[in-house]
Length: 437
Ligand code: HSE
Image 1: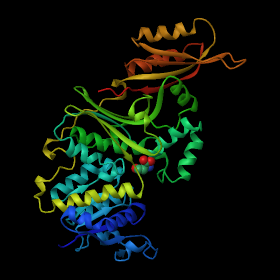
Image 2: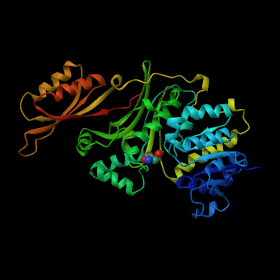
Image 3: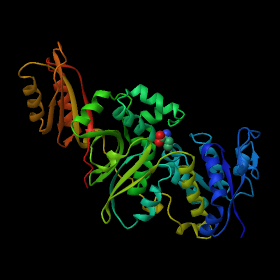
Image 4: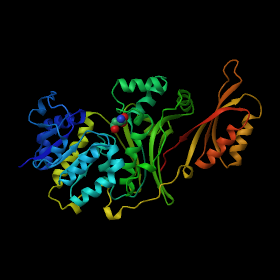
């Protein structure tokens, strides 16, 4: 059987992992795909750097544009990351009639609509399983496994670095900066770690998941994003005392009014399965009408897991090469003509429960003032925890958990509470979610 010929853009961690996996499981992969998959070319910056035995038969090119136009390549795998030149290279590959596989979440989140339009016109496939949650086949699950369901929402731990940091803050009592330094030392963080800790990487992945779940064009710019940079160790600790764990969640939910797309630190009940996902592991919880809740768990990064997703896409494309493009699995799960630009709800229209931490003067009547403000705005309290004042201190920490409330009402309440003379500084607020169907 003639092999499917693959050109790799980049031969770093993921490219090397892909080569290794194709070599190790080559026979089984060929039996699955119906044809062998062979990496014939790789574009690399430094062609002389040793790349291991699996790269021995791969022709190295220094010009990536030569690779994307190469007549002897069927599929281009973009594994360099970043927006440019990745976008230009992917569009050039599509223009040259190549199928594309990419692990690039930022690229799909920002330019997916343009890339899928170009690919549809050219009749080529674009696989991006590796862009979300590394090796977990969540794109395939949403696009194919759950194709009979109406998907109502999903919530995911989709940034391993942030999850590692939060786990270390909780288990080892580290502060944020020390936990981040650890994550960087272990090589977990993105080249620009602000993408991990400010929630941008999770927002890229959430935008992709939401489009596939709800059949809407990609709208990364409308995701509300709050990262973990300003989280205090005390809030991780108080959350634990109240029976909750803090996780950076990406949440997509739809209602008749529109779609919520949010990334923020969230308190989850300790016993919830997602609250048990620790370290660099990723997990996505999906709410769908026929199946109910289902949970997908696994490694969200690393050479092997990411290569697992890249190779799965390569096999899919090899299998589909003979199928008329109109009948292949659609890029965003729904046929192009049936995507709907659903309204994305603004911040203040979102409903959520909240954790509030205030620093209050330790004197009679202060809590009454606070609860009156909440009551006047229709905000109901689920739990209150007041800490002992430190010896000699005049102020105490008060933690309140609210029932579900409109975010706008909560912001009003916070402004009024902060204006009380008995309250010191700002009120810390964090989302709280039971993730019930
Ligand atoms: N920096 C990402 C993470 C890598 O921490 O999850 C995988 O996208």
